[in-house]
Image (cartoon, rainbow, N blue to C red; front, side):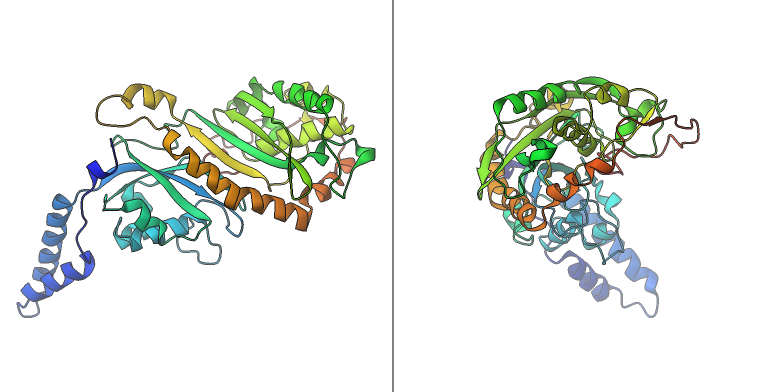
Length: 393
């Protein structure tokens, strides 16, 4: 169902119009109760005339300069992606101003939280808003160029973008010198990844597929914590390519959900093995009960690529009212956004700050052979450390 079929117009200058009407009819001495009743009546009439609808928004953004996705209401020191989005929703007339301060009033939920500096090409948020004319253009007119809303679809009233998500796909873009043997690190960017090494990298990544105990790949989770068991559907390093004279590659990983730092540690351990700092047997040991020292790759390069709603699509995608949550028509826009805003930022930042090269120099301080037992039973299992919830990768 197209966006235009759902469009309704919100009240113009709602807060001021409501105030004028109440003031004009509330001249009853000093009795403020009449004014309050008139305001409440006006708001109720407007709600019935212009009902909100539950929708999802497809978002793409470059995370550089922002302190993650999630908004911290009341904090102005650390700007987030949601700060910009909520301001744009208010200014464009999609939500009333008070919903920006209390986001639960619009049933707002992000599919995955991204950490400081992390980008997204396919983030999904669910919320209730007024479906105004030219809604995407108006929202984007109030957003900086590095944040864009690329699509909108109606969903069921009880839809929650986090809870209904079946899987997430993340991408990690890195210079291929990360896979060079430790004695052959090329700081000048001249290294080129050969086919034999790429095959080894992908063989190691394929070992992650299936269900494993990833307690060593996050923090504050013991080996007997059931929430540390995660299901990985696929993980692969794609063919390398050149950008500004340096060779890069993109790693893609699809899983049901990820814990804080899990993806970066999965990649960090494979890099340590390929470079010769650790033996291949460490992967199997890391899924056991012993504590294993696993390096965490830099955050630069991590991108939320896509989120998946297979079960929702199967049940509601063809019900005649809702659309399946797939974004084939927006794929060209997504690709263009990555090429213009995400990939150049990663390349330029890596060349300027050399975060991967600096991190690789710390690998020799890790003790990959040491193991230690972890205390059990001290963890509050109700705490949410998921990358896709209240934690972050």
